[in-house]
Length: 337
Image (tube, rainbow, N blue to C red; front, side, top):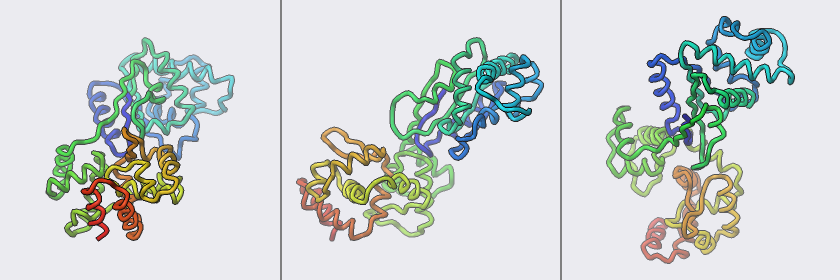
């Protein structure tokens, strides 16, 4: 099983819950949680997965396979060379065959996108040849885009069930806040938190903490306070954009139904290029009717909150002159006033 979704959506929580169930059924769990900073360390994922496998299991392998696997796992001397790779692949496959002779084994891999390439290649080799071996896998992978088969699915013996972890509903977020002893905010405020967080439980909890720390009632027209953890997460994604593109995205965040044509009328020169750059960065997408829509609802909140007040006023003033809808025009004029 492959669980995918953006950071904070709950992949690791689901993975831990599934692992507990499988361990209660008597399965042997082999775990690893690679990190981005360790991705360049060869075979580290395999070393972590097999950390609790004793040498007595390795002793059941043929001499050549046992030797190359002990070297790879840093339990012996020597260095793995190119001529040993086939023996290493066969050794890992045969090791799982020995491990699973008494009880099924499950690989539990959290953040599989950071798995080092050497370990990933070995596990994919085993997954393709796992027929007759009682080994399965559950992995999580961080993704921003929707759809498409993930390369990390190759780590799991077939058939592979790929599930995108869905966002929480408003009622589920209410339950989450109540479970953690949060204040009983009004339904409109909870709906606003849900809208900005996109149903992401981590983002919602961080927004809730910022509201609690603020300690004062929030005006309905005032942006929600944003903790540094969320600000830095979004600002890091904006780093590749030019100043002109960021200015265009500010206008997008201030508009009700932004289109490239509306952005041009609002004075955003090079609007098409700016939107194209934001699309490439995974920040926005073009919906039906040439509408520019943010992929992550937290991004426009950060862009709007981080902008200088005079830049926000300029955006609303320009939009008040550019929009055709009188209600939307009144809204922009009211915000300027």
